[in-house]
Amino acid sequence: MTDKVKELRKSKGLTQKEFADILGININTVAQAESYRQNYTIKLLRKISEKFNVPMRWFFDEPGDLDDTGVYKILDRFDYKKKTKVKEIVERLDKAEIDDIDVIIQLLDKLTRK
Image 1 (cartoon, rainbow, N blue to C red):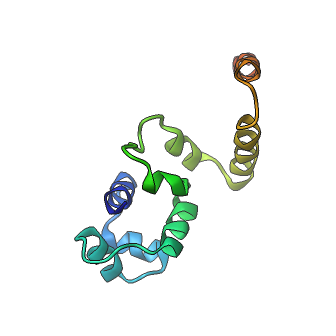
Image 2: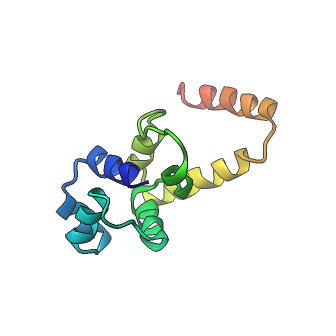
Image 3: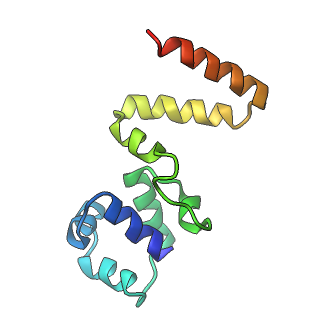
């Protein structure tokens, strides 16, 4: 988990201090976690998850490179309203059948060719 937080920080090009400032925590918390002297709390992981648009489960899943799909980079470019709509779409897709998802992809292909 600590390695994933460090990977996230580095992928954003942030120093430990910049990362700590964004989260409103002391740099020592980041430094100690990255040197395996203490763990991040669930509360802090939740805050990191929210600030950087990373699902909580990503911290605990086995290997998962942030750049595997580029989804996080795409989401970073969205404004709040668009992120909210994308979240709603993803939540609905979670309940959809694979054939329905294929139809949605075809529709998106047509819409984005404009």
